[in-house]
Length: 214
Image (cartoon, rainbow, N blue to C red):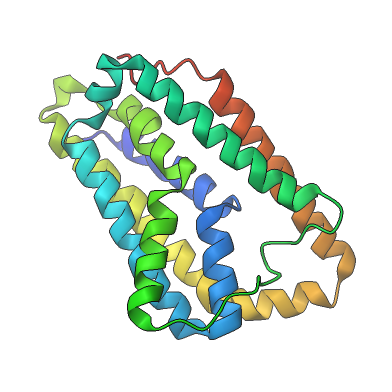
């Protein structure tokens, strides 16, 4: 069984990640604003399945694979950092947009909304790094089954992520209207998003993968 400290630690990390603008937030907000809350919630269902795929991989011991093949982990970190830097550039460049300014998204049917939500999450470098690098740091082999500990830690992360994302979906329209009437707040939110994404990218590039090497 996991310790209270491990549960609290993964909960704080999960909360920080879900509140940091990234691919999931960008997609869910845009979809909710352009097509409505129901579409946003259907997309969130796909995001949930993406989380379950990562959790299944964590329980199966994906960190062990990356420990055995360090080059694969290095490739993951570099690819993730480049993607985050691209998102940061899109936010910070002249004419960049906030996460709460919807992109041009066509109206999609429920099945496609679900699939797009799942794919967006599966390609989210923040989530990949969370399960490959951060989650193993909270596992203590002396406390019992490692797969079971991974399952509990992943369940905590998924519960927090889905709860916050659901709130984002339900309030996206209200927040977007609020920000649209306050240009200074909109610019600040955009610069904050770009800065945080850049910081995450730098952290990925400077991380030596100590968690995977355990």
